[in-house]
Amino acid sequence: MDALRSLANLLALPQVLLPAAGAVVLAVLRWRWPWTRRAGLGLAAVSLVAFGASLGSAPFRHRVSQPDNVAILVMLASTCFFVWLGLKQACENDERIDGVGEPVEAPEYREHVLSWPHLVSLELIFIVGCTAAVLVWSLLAPAPLEEPANPAVTSNPAKAPWYFLGLQEMLVYFDPWIAGVLLPGLVVFGLCAIPYLDPNPRGSGYYTLRQRPFAIAVFLFGFLVLWVVPIVIGTFLRGPNWSFFGPFEAWDVLRLDAASTLDLSELVYVRLLGTATPTCWLWREVWGLALLAVWFGLGPVLLGRGPLRGHRRELGSFRYHLFVFLLLAMAGVPVKMLLRWVLDLKYVLALPEISLSI
Image (tube, rainbow, N blue to C red):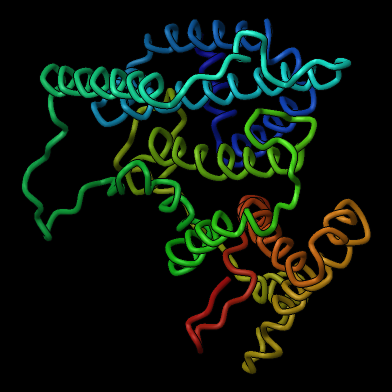
């Protein structure tokens, strides 16, 4: 068991967990049939057994039994279930679409009913049931209230509510205004722009994966890998002093991880060239400016001539460049995190003169 727990602590490292989560999402989308049938059920059974066996560890049991964290575990389980259910229905619809003359709807759903009273009555029953469950839970479980706020004593670790922990995790890798303002703003803007940037008319009103593989892959990667996984890291794996602790490691308040990070200009001039950084900001940050120009300037051109050639023809010049900008901005998040893990890179572009750091 000690060897398995050490392996779990190693796999839970952010530089391992995030790429592994992305690989799992792409593998599930690529080989979707097994995961939506017996393999998915088998994985769920193995996960439940592993979770039950992990409760024997005191640090793991302490974290998952916290009143706040129980709700997050329920959310994670429901998220996995509904993603699996959606992929299962998408695979079934893809199979029907391939059949000759077979409609998209399953035979048991061919008969249509009115929203009122059939749908609304079911929704009302579920709302009452969920309200009753939350009420019973609030009576049985103690509220996670602490002492009144004291400005002289800061809690360690100081964590935001769970729905903001993903953004708080981004503060490790990005400037505060990028992690707290720009990235959430781009997420909201991108969601609002979907109807204008996605001209594919197929898949409306039914689940399908074969007719919308790119859109579903981008959504699942952004939602699961870049949103849910950072919430898990911030909730269960970030301890005192915002240090990283494996799921089976006890939290040590005296532990402080070293933060030996460098900007790209320091990495190039000091580490590689062995000289001091220039005093002129333009010459100092020329490498970061060049890298961003290649990423956001050359990237749309290469993608438009390669895998996104069809999107460029369908969307036109303006909508295509807006679409690729949002796509590259989303892809830049894990790339920047990877640079931090591999090269200890803090900022690609650091301009304290105008309070701009990327």
